[in-house]
Image 1 (cartoon, rainbow, N blue to C red):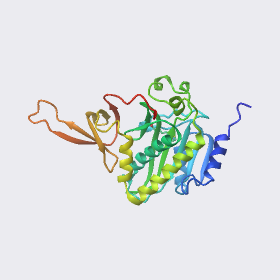
Image 2 (image 1 turned 90 degrees about the horizontal axis):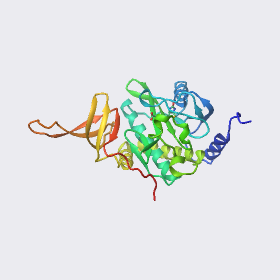
Image 3 (image 1 turned 30 degrees about the vertical axis):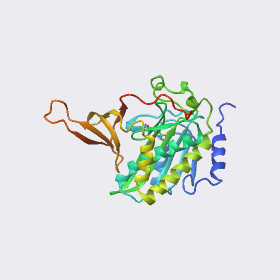
Image 4 (image 1 turned 60 degrees about the horizontal axis):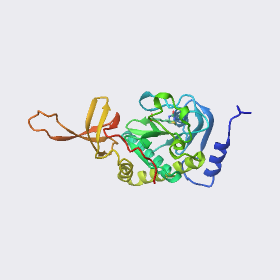
Length: 288
Ligand code: BTN
């Protein structure tokens, strides 16, 4: 009996989405008990012509993909693995904005569904009390200089116990359960996330990036104005985080090395890399 798949998450999700909570996202919804990667599946569907708003979700992934060629730990029965197909009529340069937008939607769902205080770490990791609870992998298909489709893949560690993380991740990653001490309803969280994602996406289509960028900066308060180190493809860069621009690039104010005739601050745009806040992130992650 124990080996039979548990369909309660799928049933609860379908029932909540039929209320209807969203107009676009999750229509249709493809649910798998186990899949290699929801992003790979969504990309295949997109190539076959799936419509905007199609969502692929799974109870477990056997080949969950992370950023920078990493893998994403995806045990069954506890977390959220979800990919959304979007088809904005925008240039390919707009795709990174969707990753930032998705991180804001996750932060808003965490605020709505728990007592936790999420923080966004550039570009789109969501942390609670300094530990990563969500990762986002955005992949695009282009038509010349324009987007044909964008797959926004979101992994949220919802009810994962500590033992489900490999030892080397146990001090860096966590789950909402571990942070708030009680299980979080996966279906309610998923619908909250899709609702926020849809609201932000429509706003972005109608008004552009500024509103989303400002919301992102609101959740990145532990980064902005702080001393940071970025391990980027071009090397290690140290400076003060100042914000993001239209391309989702992190703006880092650096000072030219001492000894130069006139040390002067300049702003560098970082398009990829891993950020470390020199003084670390806040260790408490709850509202009270
Ligand atoms: C990261 O490295 O931080 C990004 C992780 C993204 C994981 C999600 S889980 C759902 C979707 N399917 C995947 O294979 N990856 C993304």
